[in-house]
Length: 216
Ligand SMILES: C[S@@+](CC[C@H](N)C(=O)[O-])C[C@H]1O[C@@H](n2cnc3c(N)ncnc32)[C@H](O)[C@@H]1O
Image (cartoon, rainbow, N blue to C red; front, side, top):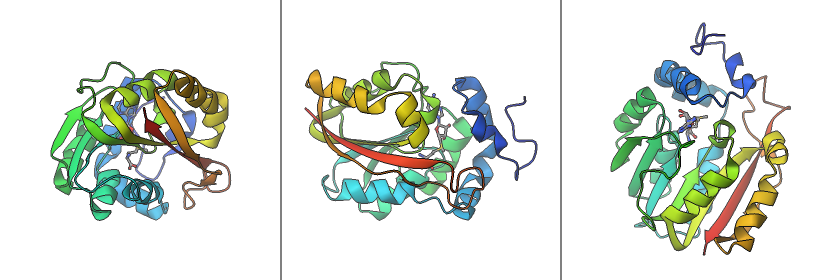
């Protein structure tokens, strides 16, 4: 199967749940120019939901890492929530180029989040958000532990996971393990919520869970 969408209306590749980084990068590169428009058609609300959660706990001058920033929808939501210091990382260079056009990030870096440690300093951020990305990063423990490293003590780690993968990858168990290691304290785990109501492959089939933890 080709990594690029055969046409811009066919996004059935998403249902494959690929964790092949190069294939994923190629797919998002090909989609980058139209991604924002497509996601608006699918009524994608997760960036706003997560930015609203962070706004309640993180001061607006706090530096936030947007991990898997894509074309910048999640950074724009943070900016709309009042955050002014944003770093974005993503594997898709074409998406990063679109994100640069959003004009809300002070730094954008091409990073493969399957490779840890991330090229980011310890305790560099007041918060990390990771929205719509962990589908593609199968080692949940490795990436969440890495988020704990780059967020300073007392900062927040907010992420989403699809309900099916939340169960399959035992995200609740990973959260507990990191709590047992005293790396963070879980703050909230939402009930499964609508994810992409305007996409027939997702609407009443795939829901999303929002998680927030406080770095120790
Ligand atoms: C559904 S998009 C979400 C983008 C953005 N957070 C948003 O809410 O619009 C998933 C993003 O994850 C990125 N991604 C997938 N695998 C990755 C990896 N291994 N490392 C870094 N980014 C990755 C893709 O390039 C894509 O931009």
